[in-house]
Amino acid sequence: MAKYRTTKKAIREKYGDANIYSIGSCNLQFLLKYVSPFAYSVRTEGWACDYYDMGKGIVLCDGYSPIGKKVDFDVMELFDRKAREVWEEYHYTDEDKCEKMITNMLADFVGSIK
Image (cartoon, rainbow, N blue to C red; front, side):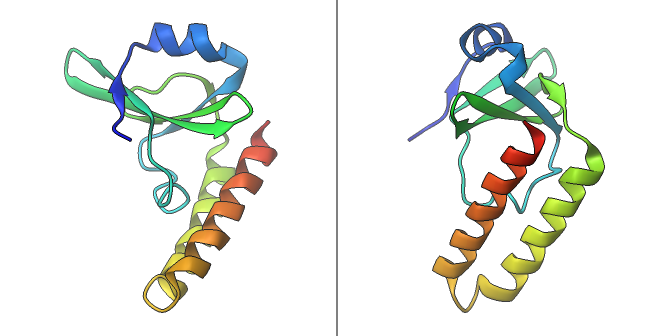
């Protein structure tokens, strides 16, 4: 499924400010390896952010100009570091195991920020 262009206002109206989490740009690059954004927004300078639907009405916003509640950087760093370790160990030898482990970590991450 291709991501679609939307506005920040439309995302806020659909999900509510309490359910959108700002993760900055590339702070969760390993943790988000196996999910695709459903939408993106632009700004005058170009791409602004991507939106990832985490289920149960929760959205992660990744980009240069993200919206939502800021997630603690140390929490993001911890989870992404663990995901990177899993990816480096398993992605060549057991991709299915790697994907399952990282997907579970992502669910744990989302649970920890709510």
